[in-house]
Amino acid sequence: MLHAKPALESFADWASSVSSDDLKAGYERAGHAILDTLACMVSGQGSDSTAMALTAVGGWGQGDATVVGHDCQLPAPFAAVVNAASAHCQDWDDHELPGQTHPSAVLVPAVLALGEERGLSGVAVLDAYVVGLEAIIRIGEACGISLYSRGWHATSTIGAIGAAAACARLLGLDSQATAHALGLSISMASGFINQFGTTAKHLHCGLAAKAGIMAAGFAQAGFDASHDGFDGTFSLLTRMAGEDAPGFSAFDAKLGKPLAIIEHGVVVKRYPSCGCTQRIMDGVEDLRAEHGFTAGDVVSIIGRLPAEYMAVLQYERPQNAAQARFCMEYCVAAQLLDGALSPEHFTPESLLRTDLASMMPRITKAELCEADGPTYSAVGLADEIVEIALTDGRNLRLVVRDPVGSPSRPMSQEAFEAKARRCFSGTLQEPDQDAVIALCGDLAHCDQVGKLMRFVA
Image 1 (tube, rainbow, N blue to C red):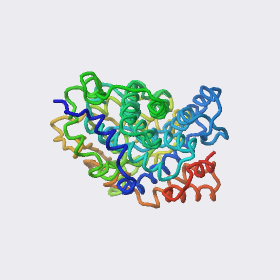
Image 2 (image 1 turned 60 degrees about the vertical axis):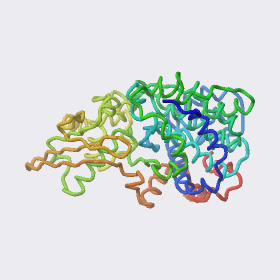
Image 3 (image 1 turned 45 degrees about the vertical axis):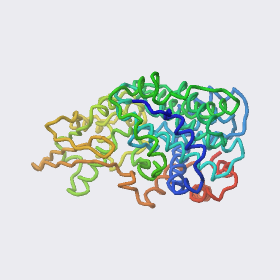
Image 4 (image 1 turned 180 degrees about the vertical axis):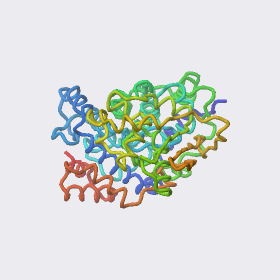
């Protein structure tokens, strides 16, 4: 049953009118997300995906938005494409659970590029991020896992709409123009999960960020768009999510009550691999810490996952680094043998390691079934199960609900900062690392966000 008022209009009303005073409860978490994403950009700035994206867009005009690590400035949409590819190429950027997206690798490149281009303040960028995340998570709740199950990449579909919401807020668009920006972004929202394991997935984040900037810019220039793109007859809900989706009936009442960044937040990734590998790896690490076994003690490991995650983790014997990030067997083997998973595991040399090849057959994944007695989180996501058989006859089992890095299992401040410095290492000098960490922690008092970008240029 449709609303008397389209859900898209409800969101546009809220996003254009909510005050900074009401949004500032999310500033601390937003600042953490911006720091984590900038760190991922710096870590990924030398990747092939970043180089290819810059080659493609670098000749399309000069601008005022920084390309991280490349001493050049481009128009905001194109800088966002490159920076988002950098942020996402190692799959170390954050994700969120209700919508199953990588929100910050879309939102942060978009708002930083547009904010720098327009000379806007840290408060404007923080407000925009919180509004954009509200869009992503609340739309994600309405579409549920159904959108993913139908093959859509939520990051490049819902993410494009979230970026448009963020950029409309950043530009100060009124309710009508914000609604048009959202409607326009739906026409640019696309991408399928069959791109996982290719560099096209990295580009998905960039295309979503660009779509958000351009949709807001087009709306500001006067373009209009349909207002029934969320929940109309031909809409995100009916054509992308389908009849199994929860729908938008509770959408209006939830906007900002509380803010989605407070209710759900984002998951800061512990490991540079697909989000579908994270909880299994956390379970292995928890059991190893409790029981003190080594890789040599392991007879077998079974990771029991939801069907949707099984479809994503489609590579059992990866042929390249992009595929390896979507191979649970490879990631767990590297974790067991080397103590932790790192970006260095995703190189041609690591893929040829005989010890990893020997370990992987002991690790398997299986789809959760009724015999497993599955349990579910509040957002409807199935808990995962790790089962480990050891050479001494012990059989270990652990049910994992929330990944490390989620608001319910947060990293310590020390671990969070250590990840950022690990990403910055070898690229930023320590004083510049200190400056970026300090600025992200105090963006509300930064008069121009371009001051932050100078440290990562």
